[in-house]
Image 1 (cartoon, one colour):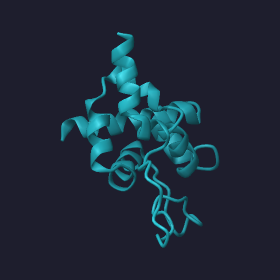
Image 2 (image 1 turned 120 degrees about the horizontal axis):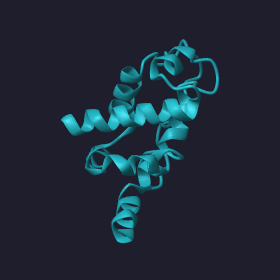
Image 3 (image 1 turned 135 degrees about the vertical axis):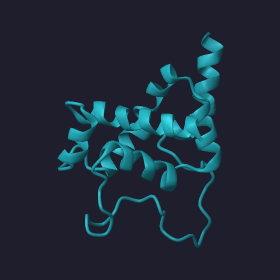
Image 4 (image 1 turned 60 degrees about the horizontal axis):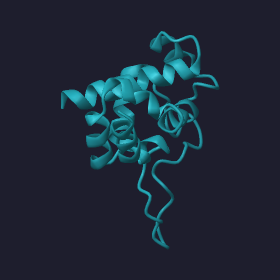
Length: 128
C-alpha cells in the first residue's frame, strides 16, 4: 500500500507542484503562458466549476499530466490540494473576489472549492 501511494505521488509530482514541466526554460523563451492574468479584463475568471475544470485541462496540463491525473484513484486526488489546488485558488480568485465560482462549487471556503474543481477535472479526464 505504501509503495502504491509513493508511486502515485512520484508519478504526479508535476501536478502536486502546480503543473508544468520540470525542465528549465530556454534562454529566449516568451513569458510563461500560465502566468496569472494582469487584470480581469485580460483573462476573465471562470464562474463555474465546469468552466474552471475545462480551463485547467486546456491551458495548464500537458498530455502526460492529463494521463497521470486520469490514472489516479479518486482517493488519491487529495494529494493535488497543495500544488494544483493552490494554483486554482490563487489564479481563479477564490481567496479574492470570485464569489460566483465559490458559490457554484457549493463549498464554504476556497480550499473546498478548489477540491471540487480538482474532482471535476479528474472526472472529465476519466471520461475521455
